[in-house]
Image (tube, rainbow, N blue to C red; front, side, top):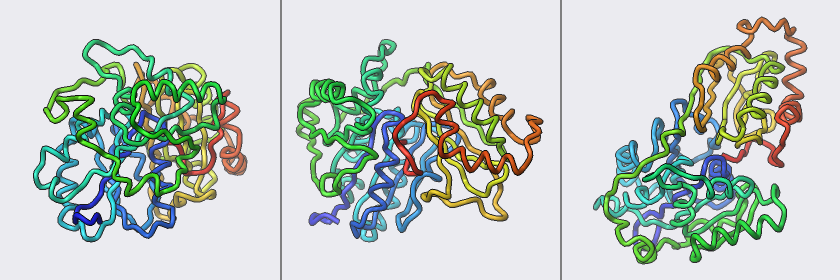
Length: 373
């Protein structure tokens, strides 16, 4: 709680796959002694992040089926007003936006609602940048009237985390920093991997300045309509059953090779034949990794728990029917693979280590369940 009596709020933004959920998990797992409420927003029909954000002492509030900057903005106000009534129980609030969010309307929320102004103080807009893929997103041509979300996320940032620096060479890293500074010369840029930055550089920094924002965008406080790129959509799949790991490996590997350029983000929580582990896969374009509950971070499937597989793909010109049919063909009893339970268990055990990475043809240096989200 700030000396003003207002609860500080940090908004975590960044394009799809930049590492926002990894950063949130890192903050929650550190020994800071703070009671933190987390507000999650996902773009897609199927929620995944509830399984990826660490279940600690913190309370987690979810907003699905839309972008926090438009269709679920009222949901954000409702949740914040709920938190305002209990703000003496929280030291800080983290809002993680979807990767397709324009941050301006999110920030506006704290100035257009009088009750929120009395209860909360914007601490900082923290933008996480994926060093491996940011240049292609900054250079992406958008239809007329559609803003480039990556540019907006950097332009409004108070602090920028240049993440996944382990995946790029020093020369490329310098070029990326130059591009970032050309968009936003005010924000401090911190280089990191896995979102690991000293917490004193992230929380309680009082970096947000309305005057600076108004200097950049004088009509910031006006409630304007904005458009998203209509060619970008999400496909969510929920199916009960067990996955055949060999078939899953084959399908995901082929998908990445053939459609990786248009697959901005893919993630899922899976049940695998022959294993009680809960498997998590994370993908950004052609980079993908898989981990399981044995490595920590998520819980294994419970003895009586329904084995419900949940997958989300976000990208350009996605074929819903093909993606759904492709996944369904990986389910035991649907595919008719003939793989024995023993072989499936052996395959599951080795999968998280290397098999899927080899199939993808390109491997990120990340590992473990604190994944780049």
